[in-house]
Length: 247
Image (tube, helix red, strand yellow):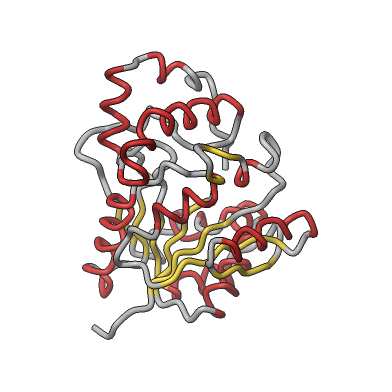
């Protein structure tokens, strides 16, 4: 197999409905977006990281932060995020796309790396791999990996607002078209919520960082956080009542 260009595209915008500006909020002296980038830079099978934001003026702040962090930025449609991914992938010559979102500052580099490798190892027989359709990992470690060919077909064929906004549903809703695999954790931790969408989420993630970041920096992982829950079970209750928005 030829050498593949693996591009991680992080979608980011300032206009979150429940917690506006969340990606530039500060945790332990860094923005949420900077923590995302630092953790993804530890993934050794990613060739390039791109922040994909919108063309709106309010997202100039995202582009400025990308420049500060020395990562590429791409601007596209606010609502048609599928097109944003498609044109970003074309611009940066992606063969394989890794999709993550900017509200996951606890993303585990080892988990992401394993999912990418799962896809690479099965490249000739697989179009899409994720840990999101059948959930066994905590929400907030979400990683989707797919071929440019699959993204292009979705871009051409998908018509519903849902499919255009959320990028990948057209792929995983059509197993008769796309060859789909799931990356499954050995233990079901899907009940844990580590994504950032509300003030409660921010409080939880901030506390986790305050416990682990001073001594581990970005080295702490999923197992470290699970162990922290055992030490301080109050953590789990901080955002236990937050419901994820439906796709």
